Image 1 (cartoon, rainbow, N blue to C red):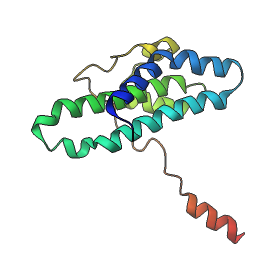
Image 2: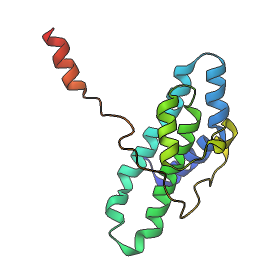
Image 3: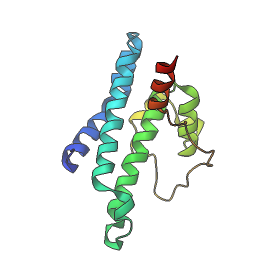
Image 4: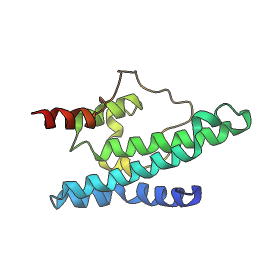
Length: 147
């Protein structure tokens, strides 16, 4: 499991280098490497959330500041990912960025390196439902084996 200090160190490196790293991979037509870079950060963020369980911490009044940090890091990660994946999955990126209330003028490649975009008390954008449907792998495997 990722320790808090380790996570923030990885997170800060990711935020400061992601646009250059992913951009270089995309420029070299190694789109999969750019996606791998993004996916690794998403896995790290997910592990971080699973470890600290903000859905449980929110019930403890003294932990509210920590819950805010956890949510900020998560939403900021999604914002950065939404920006750098626009060339690959533009529709999904648009839905993520709209939900985070990131305006079209704040979605350029250079905006991916600017932290603290998500100001406190900034409302989320409109809820347009699920960002994407869950892929049921076991149902696909059983359908494939039956054919």
